Image (cartoon, rainbow, N blue to C red; front, side, top):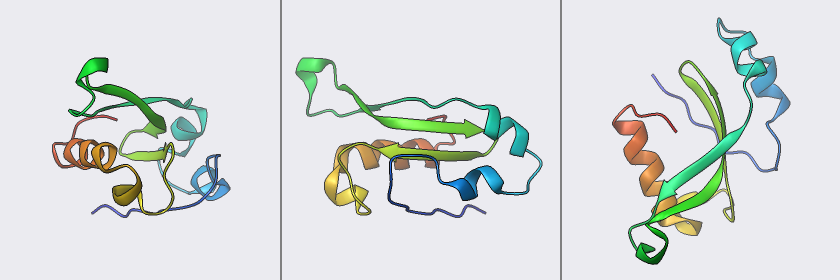
Length: 93
């Protein structure tokens, strides 16, 4: 089962760091890294763009998508499509 949350802000929310689960220490120790998304409409850049940042450990990830509000599919459709495709294929972010 997967639960998804949409939150405003530019930092990892405190609740993600406080969650009580077996991977808490690993997630809290993880660093944020770039989320490089594929946008086929940007062929002049190879189709890859720096779309945001992600912090993850095991099966829990927190992602911040640049230039998007709470409606990521509306604000960044290509990025959200890449994100959803990776999620459905169980690929890393």
